[in-house]
Image (cartoon, rainbow over all chains, first blue to last red; front, side):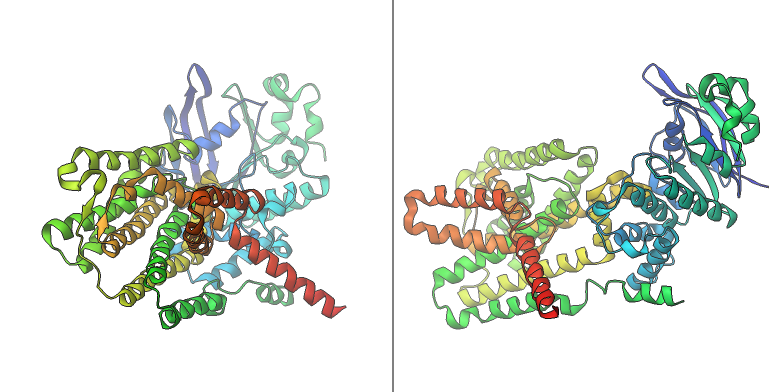
Length: 250
Length: 329
């Protein structure tokens, strides 16, 4: 497999604090990878660095062979990295359908833009995929938290990503909703989409991913399969606690 | 397949479909017939002012109501356009059909100049920056009073025409072209982008939208339209003065637009007509005119914070739904 994303020596310093320090990892095309660690470990900072919302203090991010450091967020979306946010950022006073129509106006999609009706069909198709089609004419402000999470997934999919970054997609969701979203993520990956997930709901995460990297105080402390991570002493001490294996039992 | 078919059927029709603009067309036709039954020069002149203000307000609405860039400095664009036309006409004798577009272009450049630094500012900081920028032009007019005419401004700007009815029709054309363009813009897919920037800039960026480009472009377009209207106003009044660069003007633009309903284009236009006409009507009780006028605006903001037009629309929709429900039962 080819390395879709290669991160080398990535660092981000806020004043006197190293939020991310000397981080290296690669993601292969078609892979689904988890990123875990305690609160404040630097996971969301890594997502912000990968998507151009923050500029790294040093290091390189190579995506599809191109160094994307210092690119703006919209340019990175154009190159094929799309994301969701830990705290959802919907366009509240726009309809659910309009929320998904916005990324269809991005330059990448505009090249194949076939007019509003065609875009609406595409957006409705994506909403159907996340089971929100029945609510497409409601304002986003009228959706439940779970629906907003799924709307964010639909919106990021509309940008036609090659790499999808999901920041705590299961937080605040009921068990049934987690199960549905989990199935959707698995299907997307089965269809060839490369995915990195940040998640604290480890049982659900470990079922989904083939590989997990663990951060603590901005430093990568482990990288391996869910089974390896569950047994890793450093991860157990920093995050999982004793009996980490319970997260990988089905 | 059935599911897909039913989904397609429930998709909204294009917001640019002509049927959605039937009321707008009816109002335009009404405006065109006004000179046929209104013979008062005073009333016609007042309606010309309303038509020009409609462009001031709707161009502000594009910037603030649609894109969320809070501006307290719209007089920068209005006055910039007006003074450009005034100087060109007064000193160089340039005809109005050249000065008006040039006034718009200068205001567009001012929009670009204001839009670039404004990218780093948000909310009240942006509002203060726009306010300060308009104060700079006001200050310049005082510094170069020999040329600008100082507080008195420039009298003797060439008129558009001596015929009031023709001037009225020119103002209707200006209003219809500018507000028509704005309605087309905000109902197009471009409008979706502007609204997404207003709602959440980070969300828009994460959707692949070049927020910087669209914000600057909106400043430029809003500036151009306000500048064109300002230049037209200068020729219509045969005078440009510092009132067109004043904070008072900027605040009136904000107040009227909010009262009409931000983010609707039509709302600020309607509020412009209503409040300007109310202000003039109250001149019969001049002593308490400002008091009653201000109190009316406060009441509107207090009791219908969504604005006049959105409140009327939702009221009519609720009534129609009620009637449908009753006839169904």
